[in-house]
Length: 296
Image (cartoon, rainbow, N blue to C red; front, side):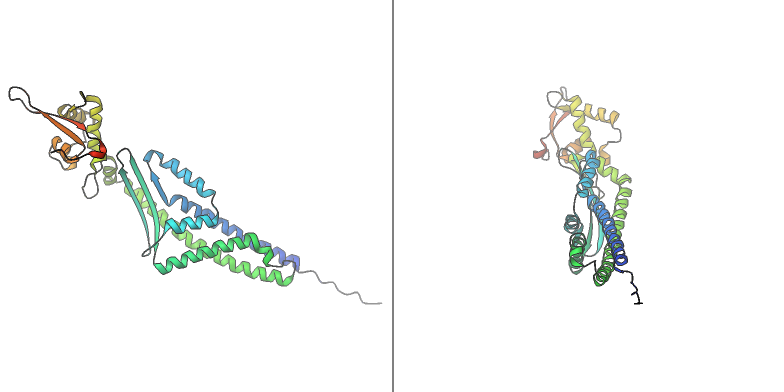
């Protein structure tokens, strides 16, 4: 009787399952990287009027959610990575554009020129790798042969290491950004910050008069006490002392309310002599903000 040849199991199905598992691992890592990158891009910069900051943040998050990995990497390299010595910086300011307060925050990673070029090239390679895995993997490897499966498995192992390295780097950047934000939040809780935001008094003692607390009080007094467009200063002082007792000329480095009117350059002043050698009465009114000049 002829001997029946022994049929060996086909190794391809097992190799295919291994390739599938490793491809899935790479795709999951890429998605994890993309999610972190979306969060970084969405929160690395924020600016607008204080009352709209949350809405603006939500809009940025929604916008980043729709971006592809390539678009997100482009946003990262254009706005978050900068040429310079390596550092992580945060900036926050509160300014007045003449009509409303404006807040801005930006986080940037500053890299030396050579490191910046290397990082930009590496990020482009990551995007290319993602596109290769998503769009061209089956074209590149014959997964119905042993050699093709083994080549695909080796490629996926290398890809996994590359993606993992990028993710660890991005996680360090995200940690630095979070620390910068925490530092900013801590500063925003200090009296110096509140003095800057509410009263327009800088850390160096300079006063942003157009948006200062005392200037706003004088303007508010105008809306309540003006007579034919002019406000008696003594009545405004009395009203402010009752309504905003913490707002005093001394707080802004001034010796008197008349000094505030002069140095702020925000008001016109009219003096009216009283009969019988009485005290001179001072009236004021706001200047148009684009033409404010010092009152002599």
